[in-house]
Image (cartoon, rainbow, N blue to C red; front, side):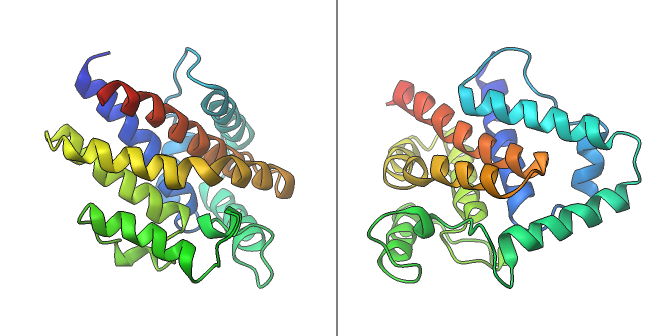
Length: 208
């Protein structure tokens, strides 16, 4: 796989996580999934990614041929029940899973400090706290794009962000998602998030 293909694969994984969790999955995204436009690799990558791809294939198989609007509505109801509330079972925020941090406090400030150090501002369109999984993956996407453009200093920013943030909570978040929902798309999203962090960990180790 050449460098461009690797960058494409990295960004596609990150974008998938953002699409699943930044809000209820929209019609265009679900249509692409059911049309098979997001392909899974035929070979093993790591345990979390492999399990995530299996869950994604399960989602596609379960919903093949169904009315897309019905699938979108079902996903919206489950997303709201599990992750929005009024009493959500799962909060897709880093500081909810990290020991010794407050939801609005030190933990959130630590995440924002990583963004500031890299000169990145979270997109306003997400409307979530800056430790939300979609915001953190948007930051990861920015770093990958800048690496592709030759900004080598972003590899160091990613190393710190992986070690101090993504690798500290995504496995616990994934376990929680699996406990609280049977929806394979959300299980796929969580497992692919954890697997992407592990995949990026290996890539960054090679780049430094």
